[in-house]
Length: 85
Image 1 (cartoon, rainbow, N blue to C red):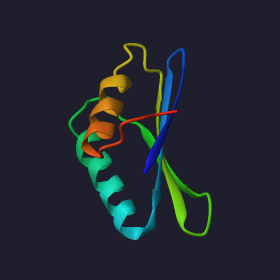
Image 2 (cartoon, one colour):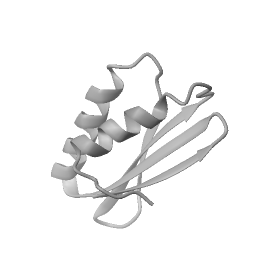
Image 3 (tube, rainbow, N blue to C red):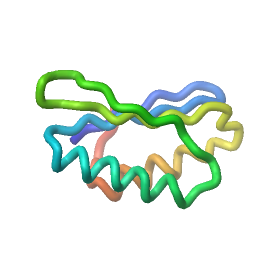
Image 4 (tube, rainbow, N blue to C red):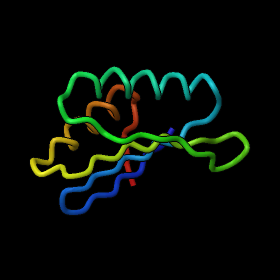
């Protein structure tokens, strides 16, 4: 698994690439569980980047108080992702 972060004023996005169904289930269930704990809700979607690899994208719009940062950190810590591009 690996992750990529993009952020601008009032916008934050974390993309998590994973390989296979098992990793996909782990990523999706972890993200769902963590996101459910917070009031601010993201838009999420998945896309294929190759035959065997997919990406889960988590986007927060109008994030005035930059609440997404700690949420992204918690997700990455739970999934043992130590670096982010």
